[in-house]
Length: 175
Image (cartoon, rainbow, N blue to C red; front, side, top):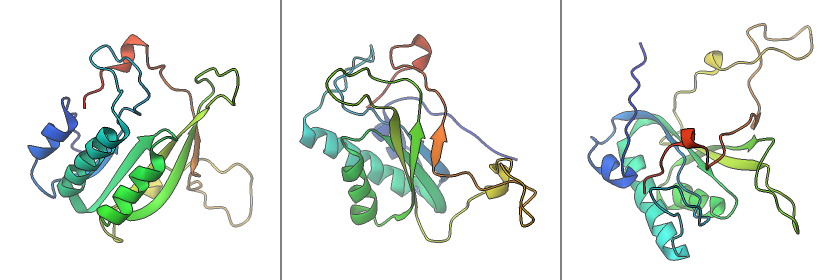
């Protein structure tokens, strides 16, 4: 049986209230610090403020993650390399994947290429971690004699649409 719990509130504060080594999986989609107005706040911190917030939040996330646990962190291109360094160098987590989420609509730019993807970092607390491959397999595209009939391991480029940040069903960001 899977026990899921959705916790809504200030991420750092809620993580501090949680017991250490109590969470199997964390999916973090923090604000990207692009100056967007999310109705409950505007994600417009200085560079140093944003890195401090990110490090504080990821430190608490690492603390509550079980030894076999995994964290996925969504991020746009501006801060992804800094988050990678925090996760690997500062928190000593184990890197397992840099996933690209490709979507069909995004910010319309007129003088540079329009962004059509976000990055997702996959880190674990230890080299021995849980990865339920059989639960996420995708149908084989082409028949081969050696095919795994249970399906293929999904790749690290995920293609699906997203909810625009100004859509009312987007929800609120807390940080």
